[in-house]
Length: 385
Image (cartoon, rainbow, N blue to C red; front, side, top):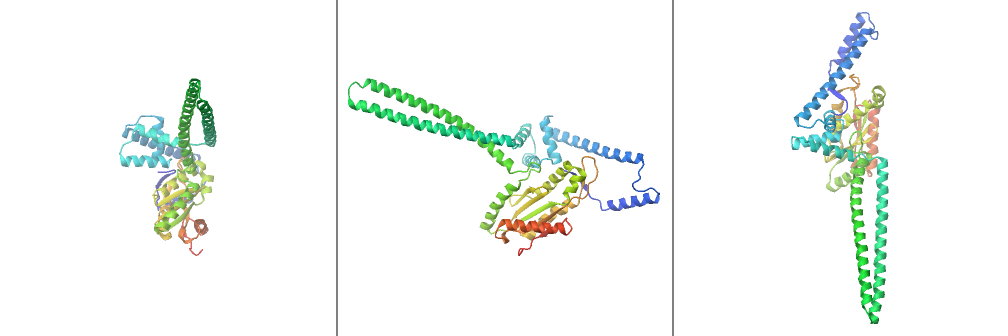
């Protein structure tokens, strides 16, 4: 599971709380006037729940590692932790895929996954360094081309000069000797240029791979593992073209977590991050080559559906909304049950608007109305809007 822990919601939970409060009222003890022993018991209970949760997680990680005969290394432990807790959606998807395909995970595969994850960790300094290297390579390449062109020009001029001597007649041996020397010099210079170009090509290939990793990193949200707003805009253009060419429907949905600031303020930003990853995981479960999910920014996600009408998109998004609304999340830090987490959404038919940006704005307005009318609901934008 991604992010926060979850357990099934009980319809009798609220009734039990009310009966408990009513019983305390009959006993003459105010609800908030707990004794020191009761306070200690509550704190101790929360601590015990956290200890038990961690023990279960350690057991699950151990079972996972031994089931696949994996070495007990920090690298393998970290991948198992990411997979079992859903802390990294990319790792979770990769593990599930290899389990479905092979049913077994190896130490080598684990190293490959971690290496691919680290390859995407491109810092601004690293990117600046790569760009400097690109400029340096371009300068070297330009210099080599200029040097090669000048050498060829000088060689041609020298040949012409020696050719005049041959035409004049006389002793040609010194001229032929100079021609041989000129040719050897030109061959040596050509060999040097070839070696430098070969080395430059190797560096260019390395830079190309690094820049590709940087591009992927620039188009993904590091917290949730989902594509970011920039990547979504590129997908929107591609999917819009496909939808028009094939005569298919295309709908967009904006989803925004309700009262997310309250989650951060009450439980801290670490818990808020886990909630974001959890919601991202629920949304990504319905994604495929015709449904794209991205983090648009903050606590807002965007979804694009090709082949679904706006009404069908509403149903698909509402199913995820209902799933989330029935979850009972628990704060990992202290083991306490969190307030119900939900999201609101707005949906629009992209093809009903001349400009896809207008469709996005319409979906955003529908989301705003869903928030205004009580949250935890999905609204469909009017196509005549």
